[in-house]
Image 1 (tube, helix red, strand yellow):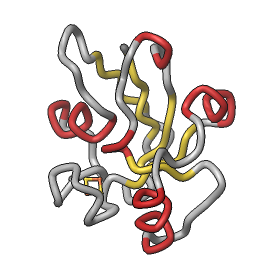
Image 2 (tube, helix red, strand yellow):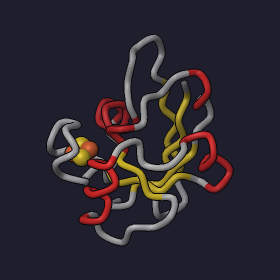
Image 3 (cartoon, helix red, strand yellow):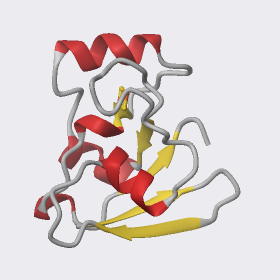
Length: 105
Ligand code: FES
């Protein structure tokens, strides 16, 4: 799946998972996308992977996947309706073209 990360200055970084099974955080780290350091390694313990999903993708991505994610988002800065933890969004075909903003960039 190809994901577009939109930075605060409007610049866009396109990244492709290729055949690798990745989530929004691991892909961002591999591609050097700023603002998604993923300090805890994807264990829902840091919220440094906080992202805002673009409006047209909110339905496809859905709400927080678990109670743990929901609670961690409450601790993240500036939670919005479109907030998700990047480490909990696994990128398969139905998310090809996904657009989002790193919350901490
Ligand atoms: Fe730490 Fe997602 S990488 S909560």
